Amino acid sequence: MDKNVLIQYVEMKEEIKDLRRRIHENERELAKLENMIVTDSVTRGKRGKKPLGTVKITGRPTAAIALKHNLLKNRNKKLEILETELLELTNQAEEYIETIPKSELRIMFRFYFLDGMSYLKVAKQMNYMFPKREIKYTDENVKKRIQRYFENVPQCPDEKC
Image (cartoon, rainbow, N blue to C red; front, side):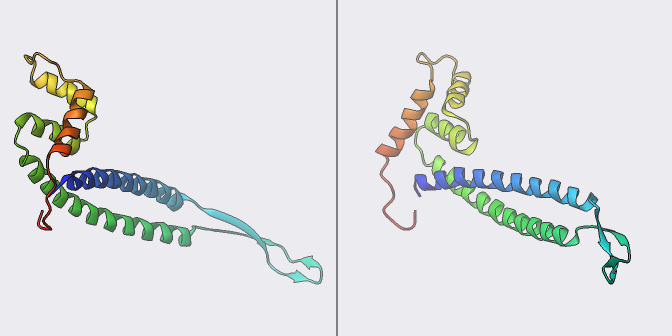
C-alpha cells in the first residue's frame, strides 16, 4: 500500500461532492419542468388562403421530464457505486495511516487526508491538541512533515501492497 491510496481517496471524495452537486441541480431542474405548462397556438387548417382559425394547445414537456428522470436515475446509481468504492478506499487509507510509526504524523495524516483539512487548519488543530509544545505547528511545518514522510518511506515494491 502506498500514498496513491490517500490521493485516490481525496480525489474520490471530491468526485462524489461534484456528483451530489449535479444531482441536486438535476432535481431543481426537474421540479421546474414538472411545474411547467407549455402553451402553443396552432392553425386548424386552411380553406384556400384563409386559415380556419387557431387553437390553443397546452401540455407538459413530458419528453424533457423523462430525459431528466433518466439522467437523475443514472447519476444516483453512479453515486451509490462511488460511495461503495469510497468506503473501501477509506478502509485502505485508514490502514495505511495506521502503519505510520509516529503518533503525531498519524494524527496529521488523518486531519489532512481523511478530514480534508488544509495545512493551516491541521496546524491549528495540532496546536490545540498539543498546547504545551515549545515549537508551534505552522502550515509550512505540517506540509514539510507530510512531504518528508513520503520521501523517506520506501514505496512497496510488491503488487500485494
